[in-house]
Length: 82
Image 1 (tube, rainbow, N blue to C red):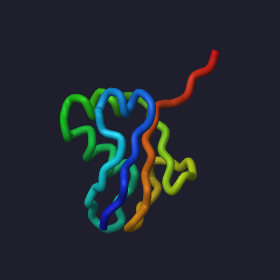
Image 2: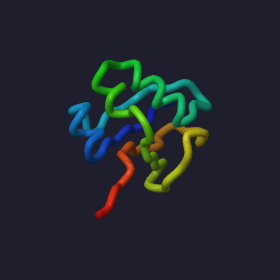
Image 3: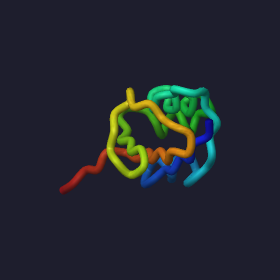
Image 4: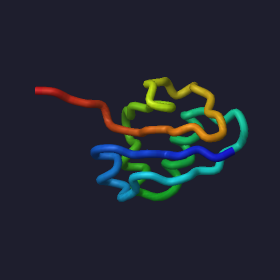
């Protein structure tokens, strides 16, 4: 199956990637995707270090969410306020 990954804020700045397609095995979870991306290179490992917010098809979700073909996965750092 194939999903679209979008990055925002610091995650985008560190990786230099804003949107790309990713091929996955059926029944992959968001945790699977994050693990796979962390192993791409040092930039991804840094960008996904610590906590990251995830949204599947524009709805916040947790790392155990199972993805489906055609899903959009957004990755962004937690928002801090002042």
